[in-house]
Amino acid sequence: INPTNRRRYYVNLTNVLLCLIAIESGGKVDAVNGDGVGILQIRPVFVEDVNRILGREQFDAADRYSRIKSLQMARIWFRHYEKPEWTLIDYALSFKMGVEGFKKARELDMITTAEHDYATQFVNLMEDAE
Image 1 (spheres, one colour):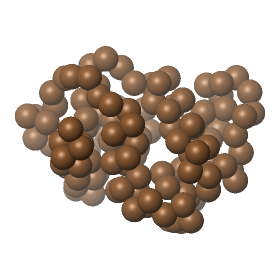
Image 2: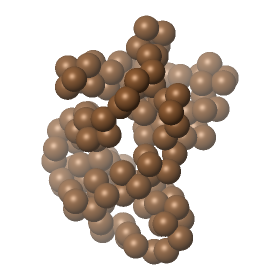
Image 3: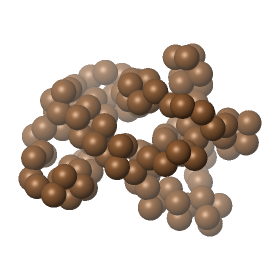
Image 4: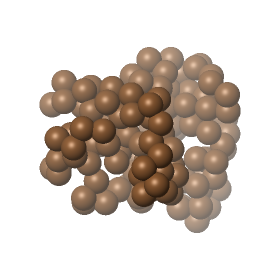
């Protein structure tokens, strides 16, 4: 991944979410790909993680089909995990792969071509949004 895209600055979370929606589903609330569904292609493990972060069962699997609840879950998730040093690539691939999955893949230099392309598409959309 091009290191010039690893710059540090304030990241607008609304723009992050809009760009992820564009990539993940094209805005289609009924989009399904494997066990990922909805505008953000949220998987059941993501819902479980958000509920763990909250310390209560606020969301269930059906909420992945709701635009509002999907966005709420994603905001909670990002606010919990994001770090000041995160770059656009960190936002994209942490969401795509999970925070620990991305961390491990980066440490082992095992980012796939598909993941690289995803990050590149995200960075391009984010740069266009700003």
